[in-house]
Image (cartoon, rainbow, N blue to C red; front, side, top):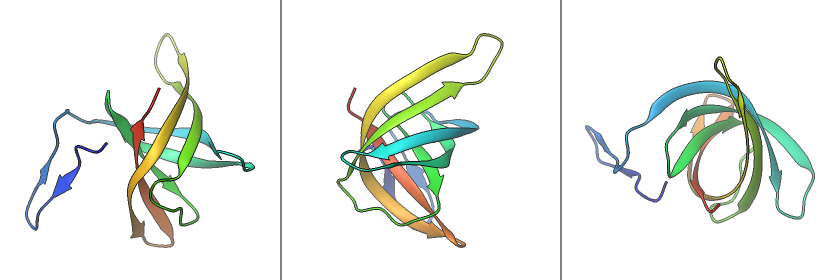
Length: 98
C-alpha cells in the first residue's frame, strides 16, 4: 500500500481497490494475536480497522478468509505504511510483503 497518496480532494492509487468487510486475525511479529476488520483490499495491500493504535513500520502476520462461493484462506506478512483515527478505532494501511 505504499502507493497510497492523498491530497485534499482526492485519493490516488496505482491499484484499484475492492470493498471488502471480513474479519482478519493479525499478529504483531513477536507479539500476541489480535483481531480487526478488513475494509478494502488490493493486490498490493489492504486497509484494516482495529481497536488500538499501531506504529508505522510494524510487521503484521495476517490470517483471513476471502468470502465467496469458494472461500480462500490467506496467510500473509505485511508492513504498516499509514494509519489514521476513525471514531474510537484506527484505520491501518498495510503493504503485503508476501
